[in-house]
Image 1 (cartoon, rainbow, N blue to C red):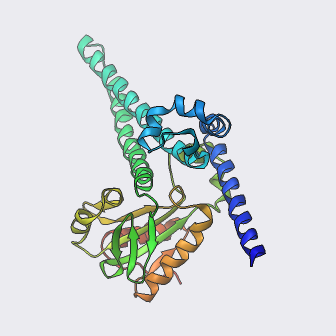
Image 2: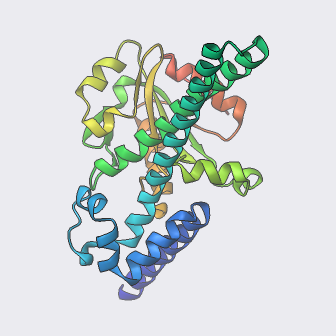
Image 3: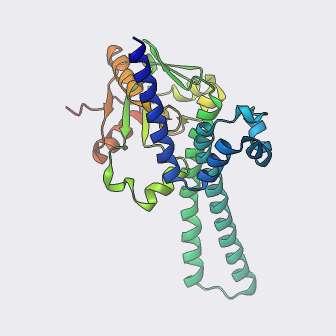
Length: 285
């Protein structure tokens, strides 16, 4: 029994170490902070005093390099948001300067307008990543739990009786895009390769979101479409992701709710459109 526990602990430790190395490869700017936290906690606390106090860390003994590595995604996300806003501001200033000096032409205004328009979806995408990161950070010890009747997300019950269907996406095995600069950038700003999408029956999303805790509320979609997008990669320890995904599918199936798992872009698109529109997903069998 003791041997089994020892092996289990060793496996968990190995998984966490591999995960930490992977995160440092994807976000090199975090490496310095992690190394400083591990080797000189006092110096680390002094350098990052304000941010650490926000997280309830007051003493060097409270510093956890693993937690700091996860927070690195939020730092990268903040830098990306600032960069996008600065680019948008520069484009607006350039257009205003051209208008004031009467030196602009259609050939200059049109490219500026297109570039400015492109910053809007970029900002919204990065902001969505941020909502997922802050939801995981503020959820406390329990980000997601599986019950017989549904899920508990950051303290908010999500009942299968309110859900019309779901989708699980897991891109961790996609070797074609994993090592590309774009993939590294996306992960560095908080993109989660593992997500759970749930669609609600029509008319329920706004009501359910209003009852949710603040961290869970950030993950709800309650506009023209309605649903819940739950990022898992930076919120759940890597060794727990597979059991969580399996548990979600089993619990949903027992309640008669279909949750599709796919990496096929066409299936993902079709399923998302159906569940966010309040319809049951089609079977992929």
